[in-house]
Structures are given as C-alpha cells and as structure tokens.
Length: 438
Image (cartoon, rainbow, N blue to C red):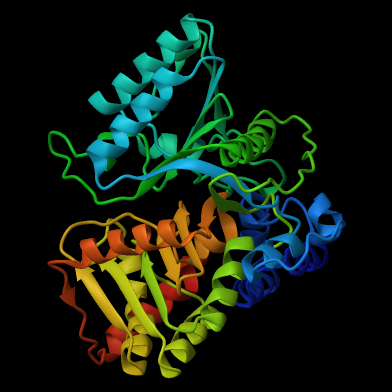
C-alpha cells in the first residue's frame, strides 16, 4: 500500500513540498498516513494526457494574445464575447444585480456557491428561487459540502419541495470515496438562461452583501455580464453538476466566438483540470509583466515560484502592489503570510493593509489582463479547490477593475516588515508546512 500510494501521490502532479510530505508520512507513519491519504489524497481527477482538446487547439486561429495561447495549450474553452459588463462597487449593488438576474430568468437558472447562509439575505434569495421554480423555470442550486457545514447546514427541503433541484457537492463524512473528501467547490456563479452571468468572490450570505445583526460587512468583488461568456459558465456548471451527482459528463468542444463587444475567458481550475490553470496563468503573467501587477486577495500564501516571480518583477521595476486585510478571518493564513511579505517589501513591492476584512480576489497585469473570481493566492485555491477566475482582455474592463482596487486602498496603511523572533519564525514555518491541505 505504501508503494502503491507513494507512486500515486507522485502521479497527482502535486506541489513538491506536499508530495514529499505525503511520501515521508506514508513511509514513517503508515498506519496514520494511509487512512488519511485515502480520505484526502486525491488532487487530480483528470490528467493532461486525457484532457479534451478544444477545436481552437487544432484549427489555427491566427496569432492570439499570450493568455489565450496559454489557455489553448491547457485545453480550456476559447475566449467568449460579452456585453453589458457591470462591476459591483459594493454589496448592495451586487445583491441588486443578483436579484435582477434571478427575476429575469425565463427558462433556466443555475447557481453555485460555497456557502449558503442562514440569514435574511439567503432566505430572500431562496424564496426567489422557489417562486421561479413554481413558475416553471428549471432552477438548479449547488452548494459545497464543507461550505454548507460551515454555515450550519442550510435546510434545502423547502427548496426541493418547491421544485428546485439541489445537490451538495461532496458532502463531508458521506463521500470520502476515492480520496475526494478534501475536494471543495469554491466557485460562485449564477447563470440565467445561459445568457446572463453573475460571478465573483461573494458567497450567498449577508456578510458579503452589507452585513447584518452581528455580522460586519466584508468588502468583496463581483460582476455581471451578458452574452456567450454566460454560456461558457453554464458549461462549467454542467460539469460540476454531473460530478456532484456522480454522473458521467463529456465536455462539448466550442469554437472561438466572433467579437461582439468585449472578450473574456473562463479559467476553471481544480481537480477537473489536467493542469493547474490559474496557477500557470498567474506565474506566466508575473514573469511577463512590464509595468504593473496589482493584487487584491484575502489570503496571501504563495509558493516559492509565485513569490520569486513577484520579487523578480519588482526588481526589474514593475510596480507590484498587494492589497490585503490587516486581519483576515483565518488566523493560519495571517500567521503564514509574513515570510512572503518580508521578501516582497524588501524587493520594493508595496503592501497595503485594509482595516476591514476584504474578501475580493482580483489581479491586474499591465493593460493586458484582469482577473476576477473565486481563487485566493494560496495553495488550497491554486492546487486543491474547484475555482473559477474570469480573464478580461479589454482595456475598459481592466481599467475599471484596477480602479476598484485602488479605491479599496484608500484608508489602508502600508505594511512595514519586521524581523521575526525565533519562535515567530518557527511558528510561520510550521503553519506553512502543515497548511497545504487545510
């Protein structure tokens, strides 16, 4: 078993530190590591050699910008057109846009969330879904198993009674099959009629839309847009839905859309992708950056390669700015991040600490690329979770996203790195070593 699982963990295309940790644990503590590996060990459900190639990878489409070339090489769907792009300045605008999308659905409505809260905001959304289902709209709701547990296990029976199709993505303690216990769907999307997309980092609970009794509002980022981009998101949802229901699913190849408005591209990442797509995109973008890299993320625990790419970008006079919460809701992430922040600030990067909790996930590189979605800059998001980032290629959208990040930096204080004590340095290293699977 040690030999078989040791070989398996190397085939999983793991981060080197994680692979070494698993192999050493299997050898030294087999009776502990073996059951843990069976529960948590699977990282990839598909492999690059078996991934479906999209037509754009076979039928040449001329010279594509490098992000689209990279996506093509990883068998991702081509860029799609969109129109009516709206970036939500705050939670109220985001909630109004989500209500508008739900109310506007005529045939189908799909929602995927990590957390479905037990509060007034979530209850109002569920009531809207129930009304839509009773009116004959096909409504499907997917909630992550771990996220649902964190929220106190939202009761989905009323939704099902109204005709809403629901599924819990890998329920904890009930689906440890084939090592998938540790796989979480962190994607957040809502799609109406395959033509209108709402997406970002917001979970469906009050804290992400303005707060509530005992719940301070978090700063977060989301957007909505119409067009072929929404159909791409629905294809991603269909794949997740099939996996959650333990059904086979074949990805449909898609042609490149003609440009009607802006162009954007979905970068799904996780066990359903042969490559670590978002990680590969970020690493390439940081090495290619010429003028600026601006990042907003609640948790910043990059691996050595990402950190080195950012440090080298700073040293070649690229403006690197990082926006973080002064104190996040995960103390382990806060304890692990100072090592990377010390390296960055020493190289000349600027780190801004926002007084409130900021949960937004956005990256802007030059005037070439802007990413908005669900992925954090940490190992769990980049190597384990089902995540989704949307890459915008238009200058107007890139400028709008960059402006939003700059607005959030108003009132933030600049981080000043300090040399850690011996015990602090030891604690940081321990959390970094153990935190990959957390």
